[in-house]
Amino acid sequence: MIDLIARLPGLGPRSARRAALFLLKRPDALLQPLSDALGEAAAKIEACATCGNFDTLQPCAVCQASGRDESLLCVVEDVPDLWALERAGSFRGRYHVLGGVMSALDGVGPEDLNIGQLLQRVKTGRFGEVILALNATVDGQTTAHYVAEQLQGLDAKITRLAHGVPVGGELDHLDDGTLATALRARRAI
Amino acid sequence: MIDLIARLPGLGPRSARRAALFLLKRPDALLQPLSDALGEAAAKIEACATCGNFDTLQPCAVCQASGRDESLLCVVEDVPDLWALERAGSFRGRYHVLGGVMSALDGVGPEDLNIGQLLQRVKTGRFGEVILALNATVDGQTTAHYVAEQLQGLDAKITRLAHGVPVGGELDHLDDGTLATALRARRAI
View 1: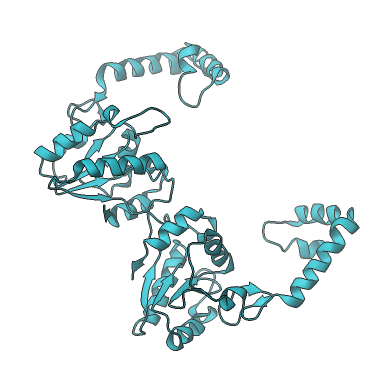
View 2: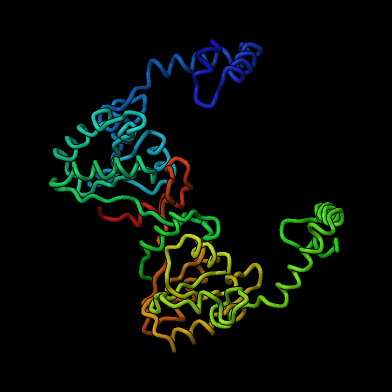
């Protein structure tokens, strides 16, 4: 049990031992309920065959929801990014989860991501715009360029998130790259 | 001496006492050199009459520098923002320091800022573009709107920094406002 807990992100062998002891001291309040919850998750939650989101429904609740904009497809790296956009409540279209980003260091190539499935969706769907909402990291932007190239020639317009000063950001505390990007991409008032 | 040190930003009476004692124990290595440096700064450094930057030169080194783009004027809140942009090295025009932002809470109105001087510079200068590089805070944006209104009708184009995902930013760690802004201001690839 300790070995398995230690494999969770952010936990080492020492904190795993502490967590295990904490659980063992609370068999009814925590240990058994957590065991049940994990078992239920293993049995019921799976990746949506359409977008890649995790849900108990197949297709997932976001893919099933009516009243969303069918012409907008938002491509994200992973499920937490989809959840972040849903939390922000500012996007009302459909999603596609790539399941990661291309990374030479980690040996992740385009064939390891859900890019083929994305092309298929865009080809057969009626999306007017594909938004590449990938992280503003080197790997995220490399992947965005690759995906944009693959999507070229299809009918959908390809866009990416704006880069610049974050809300509440003070110039004095920003890194040079963000300042340069924000200056380069300045907009008329 | 302790009372004066305690008035510096980030220091309270307790840390001022510690700093004073630290100085008194090092009269030749720190106390006298610091006293000399402060005296020299008081005697030689002043705000540039043109842009508001601090320098020993009048006008300041940035205003005197040749080879900078005379058609670009970058308006910043305060001197640290000017320094941040110079550190980033991505802007090669002239600057104008407002000396703060409008704030109803702090009782700072437009008449407390160098806005009249800015209008005068834009009217008499040959700036093709005025970049309002104010912080992405509520007060910063209020001030930007006010300044933009005042500049309307003059020849110069008025722009602002791009807002969105900062360089290296991961969607999962961004606030809802930045995500919404980045989505709204998305760009074609």
